[in-house]
Length: 193
Image 1 (cartoon, rainbow, N blue to C red):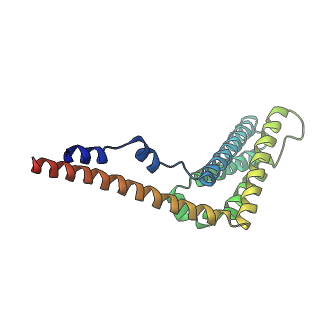
Image 2 (spheres, rainbow, N blue to C red):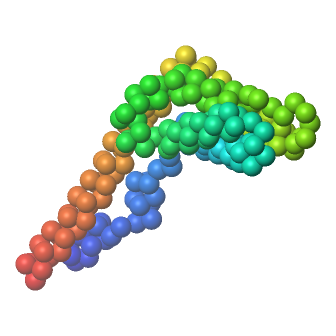
Image 3 (spheres, helix red, strand yellow):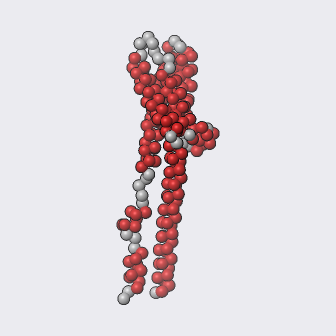
């Protein structure tokens, strides 16, 4: 009867225990991250569309005020992209963006700024089409954010994020305890021999 062999067998890590402690992410949080990515891409499209319009406005000298307007639209759209990253620095100074309704209204504002002052003379149809696509994409994302904010989806997301962080911390603590337990058992076995 080998007691040492039994102890080693009990404490040997198995594939089941390592897969059991690893969990997939929360599907709701994954969907929120995906939607945030789509919103960021739509805002980046608005940045490109407004930057192109600003360059063309300043280049032709046709409409100086349209160029300035487009520069402001680029800056605010950059702020939308930063808000979608949920960077704590940005969230600390603009508390309204923590709430999805506020974030959605900002996105709608950028979409309207992107769509404003189209080329009525038909000289740049491709740019007008690009502006329309970018603005309607961001407008749709903004409307979804406003409706979701009214339904308190943002509150649900923050609660699940806190739960996920707690779960990850508990898993790390458990792994650390298991590692420490193995070390102590190895020391105990060495003392017995």
